Image 1 (cartoon, rainbow, N blue to C red):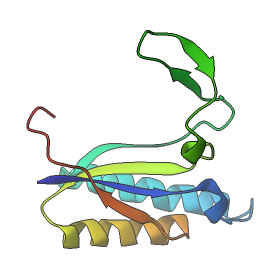
Image 2 (image 1 turned 45 degrees about the vertical axis):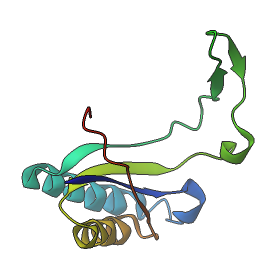
Image 3 (image 1 turned 90 degrees about the vertical axis):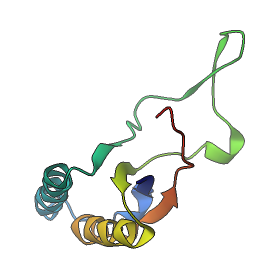
Image 4 (image 1 turned 90 degrees about the horizontal axis):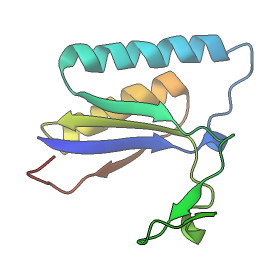
Length: 113
């Protein structure tokens, strides 16, 4: 089994306020399906109201982030799946529910996780 990250940036989810409850219901249905299938690891959205900080190797905390991740936001799902094809199927379910394209990435295998 491989863990896959399925994600999208907030700006890609262009949903009217009227449609937001239906999108939330559809997304929650996919979450329940993934949990029932035993593939759910984690999911959630970045709280964009909380600014990021950097924690250095010595424990020093400073405001900011890596330049390439300055716009890290949106929704994230991690599923543990048997194949890339299965990951693509789940990403498609999430894309339909959220009404926006999803990015799919595989985590490297780590026997300790």
